[in-house]
Length: 160
Image 1 (cartoon, rainbow, N blue to C red):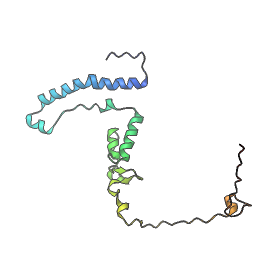
Image 2: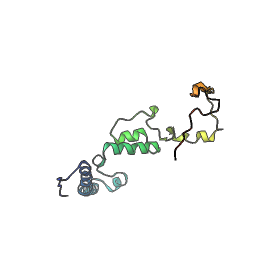
Image 3: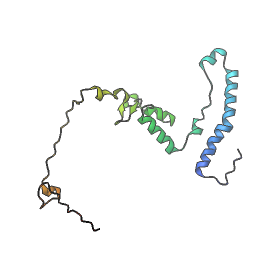
Image 4: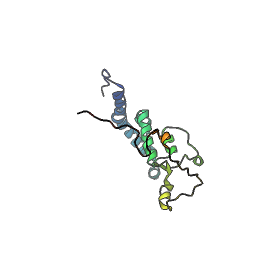
């Protein structure tokens, strides 16, 4: 990588950073990982442990891209709030506050409850009050002076 930034913009600077990690750092990191495993771990430890450099922080995209990806993952039920917070190096939300819930889109229902309404009788037991709408009279509809059922908006006549 030459590093010529004469005609650079924000987007290709970001791309160059990703390429630096992938094509320059990664080969060296893999060599160091393999060397440390060979030198530091016994054969029995190699079955249980591994050494890996974490370069996720260097490979993270811009903020908007990460948040969009997290939103998609969260709405489709394959990450929890705490999974996302862990990736962003934030403190966990306690499980009793819903930090470990896996939700799906559909007003963000718990994954375990996804089919609960379909399996029921179709009617929810609810104490909600059902409101009924009254018919409007012609003055409330803006049809003052018109016969009931008659359109108060005059018809347009087009010239040909």
